[in-house]
Amino acid sequence: MKLLDCKLIWDHAEHNAFTDLQAFNGSLFMAFREGSAHVSADGAIRILKDVKGEWQSCALISLPDADLRDAKLSIGPDNSLILLSAAAYQEGPIKHQCHYWTSNDGEHWSSGTPVAEPNHWLWRITWYQDTAYGLAYGTGGTKGLFWYEWTLDGQWQYHRLEEFENQYANEHGLCFDETGKAYCLLRRDNKDTKITEGLWGTATPPYRDWQWLPIGFRIGGPVLIWNSNRSGFYAAYRRYEQVDQWVPQWTEVAELGMDGGVVDSLTLPSGGDCSYPGLSTDNKHLNCSYYSSHEKNTSIYCSKIKTLNTENQTPKKNT
Image 1 (cartoon, rainbow, N blue to C red):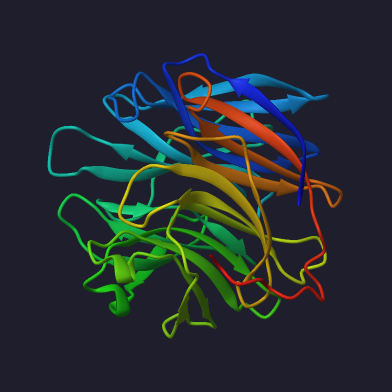
Image 2 (tube, one colour):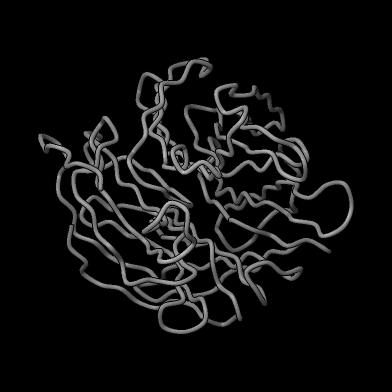
């Protein structure tokens, strides 16, 4: 992989973080949280649009008395742009409640609608046919990892992944192939460092019997998409030098084979409080949004990357 360009996109708030990217109706959109601190009551979601190489603000979304966090963008079966975010509350029995918004142009958005059970943090949704799928992890005293299926008519169902009953598994990236087989890159944060490295998981419908393999290192905020010919994947995540330490950390982009093994990887300019990337490919380059504090206050960056073709490549050993 080769870094072609990296630009600081946004630094208007005291803390700008937790990004995502989505190509929609011929344009590239970016979503992220801005607030006065990493955790603060004033968190809101900023939406940017790439207009001929220049990022322009087109929306700011907030909820009363809520810290909106971890914006995720997707395209629904009705060709609407969908924003998913978790509202964090400082008071009351509900610590987190996920909401979603829809838009036909990325600029004008519906009112927020709750989705998923209270204190189930639905990290992201990935669409297969007419259904959105994703993993939610318990918060506010609720424990466990839950597999969600959700449709735009407001109906959802979920089941608990019992294999993580005594672990803290949480953030994930997810892809589906044409048969409905799911591929998952999963974060874990356990006190036992032997079970803190990330996992590569696969499952077929109804997604109750998963096969999990350790990837060899600890990750945070993972995102996973197909490469251009669906012979492998692009992934990005926060990478930790030590499994039991917060820093040093950096943002890493990788090409993965079908078995989840790393074929190639690239460290982006980053450090300190950083990462939570978004990925989008135009079949020529890979675009990666992320945040970092290596230059100044936490700011939003976007990189353009030249990639290999993962087809016929041999994964290298994870280190």
